[in-house]
Length: 362
Image (cartoon, rainbow, N blue to C red; front, side, top):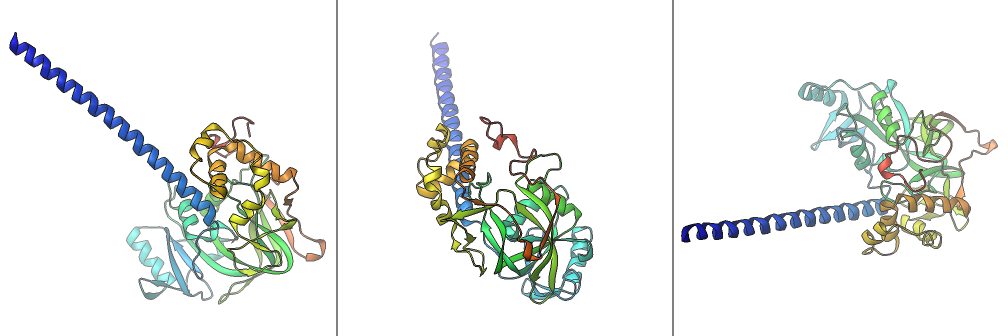
């Protein structure tokens, strides 16, 4: 009997210890998960404030997530151009041939079969291209993209008048302004890369609304030092228009160029609409998760966590006439031809339901 009693006591003690360990383990998991979520949110807020992200100093060849700076563009940046690789200057066609043999990767499409798209916002940055092309969302698994730095005459890169889901901040837009000049980057995409870029920008043939329309600009001047001048190119036009700050459209302070509009930082642009967005209530979840943040960081947090508040804040910009929609003056000589995407502002059908405003059904 004593032996049985001892065994029972030991078993009870063992069970108690196991239960405590299990509870402790679950508590640790919840704690770890909460910390990871908080860190991810902090990183996303920082991403919003750093928009349009860090850029290279000059033209580069994007190869599977790595930028190789061009030393010489040549007549064809994918053949006789040269890039710097591990401190050495190598001709591009030789570099790509070695890559084809070592990685058993298909030969990339030549420049003549690629589409020149103006990258004026985040698409100029290696970090953004890496997120788009080096993830499971890009099924092909590899991307080779010439990204050439240039200057575009008579256009400015401006703050667009809506808050984006990815980081809660204003994205970039492009606006005509005679006499201005802004830095732009030309991304030369093949058909498969184009399809992925369209998806990432919300270009959905079945959707009556979209963030952007996609089309061709003719009679423009884009000068690429060391290469040539482009007079036609393709572009994504923001359907929400440009944000007005103190009654005028605002150029992105981080984008170099001789703008005619005032240059405004992301923080200043967000502060300029504070009196509007602070009036719009946010969910209890957003209130809880964003309580540690202050000022513009808190607003970005709320935009990220609460899709309904984010959409209502965008609508408030429109109602308060803080927007100047895309247009080209008749005397500009520039022509825009829409080729894909709706010209009506709104979320495309392809936009994930998990990030939509369930209250309004947007």
